[in-house]
Amino acid sequence: MRFLLQRLAFYLFTVWAAITINFFLPRLIPGDPVRSLIARYQGQLSTDAIDSLYVLFGLDQERSLWGQYVDYWAQLLRGDLGLSFTFFPTPVSDVIGNALPWTVALVGITTLVSFALGTGLGVLAGWRRGSWLDGLLPVTTFLSSIPYFWLGLVAIALLTGPGSFFPSSGGYEPGLVPAFDTIFLGSALQHSLLPAATILVSSMSGWVLSMRNMMVTVAAEDYITVAHAKGLGERRVALHYAARNALLPNISGFALSLGFIVGGTLLVEIVFSYPGLGFQLFQAVGAKDYPLLQGIFLIITVSVLVANLLADLAYLALDPRTRKEG
Image 1: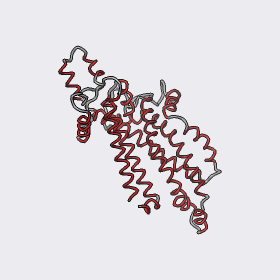
Image 2: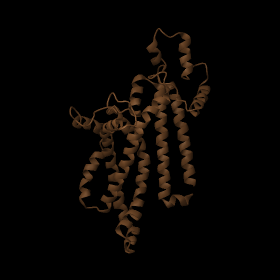
Image 3: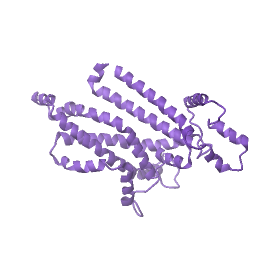
Image 4: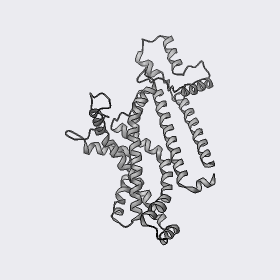
């Protein structure tokens, strides 16, 4: 219990720090973030209208910095992330709401599948070391060292083009209206295959390698020898004794690498022009859309922290020693 409370306190502090950085971000960047919006209407906005924009985006200089900070927290607690410059006057929450399902479907599914497949193959390779699976280790080592976006560029160059089944960009066929029907879902699935395969191949290889090495280490422990001496079945020893203990470092590694995984997959979205948060982030940077940048940064930070918390809970469930410390 003590371990869980310590982790919760750490995550609450991290959320506060992320929100605070989010508040100061547009105020520390050189230049005036509202100017990018005003430039579109040069000569058409009055002084009062310009002043209203500063107030609308919470950047008015008449209020103290502390007052703006308190207002920003109140705004977030209401679920209000502000208005997007790029899609003005559309709220940032609506822009993110349209992009988030694409990222969750791509990043969430591929991350979980790659971890499950990589861990399973690593268990098999480590327990049956010396088999043909060990011959694949140089390949997995090479693939795990390749950045996601570079593998995506290679995939586009080799697998897309005229007559290819794989589209090179987009989330669905142009002209289709997003809906839960077979035509749209089939097109969305077709457009997601190549980005998903890129993430899957690159990330799964690392889990195979790390889990295989841990299984080899654990297999040499005394308690594995004792389990064999008791006459326990091979499968039971492999799964309930060896794999369970070898999985603990992988769980910790998964939690620590989530930031890198999310960052890599967002770059894949940019490479494939996939309509998720990564592509929206790319557009927001180009348009200097600070409210949208803030919103995406906050969503990504909170999502990674929640995923880390779930990984910590899984570690707590798998390792009895952690529970005894509480």
